Image (cartoon, rainbow over all chains, first blue to last red; front, side, top):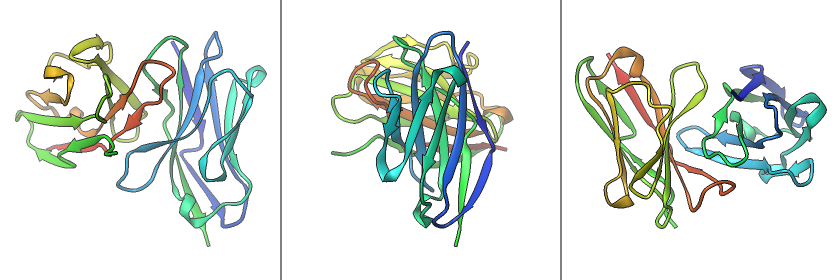
Length: 113
Length: 114
C-alpha cells in the first residue's frame, strides 16, 4: 500500500528565509505526486504536481518541488518566505491509473516577521 | 465558475444523532470524491463517484456511512448514528475526468460529535 510521510507537523521560518517542507513516499512504481495548500477557512488548493515529466516542478506562488526517485522524495521549497505563505501544506500521491489520493499528515507552516 | 461547495460548514451533533453533509461539485464534473480528516491524522479517501455510480467505496469506514449522488449532480454523505470518532473535517472534491485530471476540493464540513 502506498504511504506518504511528511517530516515535521509544524515548521516555522522567518519572512524572507528559505522554506523547505519534506515529503517521502513509499511506492514500488513512481506515482503521481502532489502538493496541496490549505489556507484558513478554505479548501485544499493544488500547488503543483509531478506526473512523470520534468523532475523539477514549478507551481504557483513561487513554490517548486523536485522528484527524486532514488530518495523517494518530493520536497517542497520556496526561496523566500512571505507572510501570506502561512498555511497547512499536504503532500499526496496517486498511483498511476488510480483515482484516490493518499495524503501525508500535513505540515503547518508559520512565518515569523 | 463556482468551485466545489459544501454545506454545512460546521455541524455539532450528539452521539447517536443523524447528520447529512452535502457537496455540490463544479458544474460538468462527473467525478466526485469524499475524503475525511480526523483530528491530528491524515486526510483519508472515503469514496469516489462517477456520475451517479460508486466507482470505489473502499475507504468507507463502516455501514453507518451512506453516500448518494442521485442524478449525478450533488452528493450527500449521511452518518447514522453518529459516533464520537466520526468527528473531523469532511472534504469533497470533483474532477472533470479521471486520472490525471486535477481534483478540486471544497472548503470542508467540520463535524463535531459530542
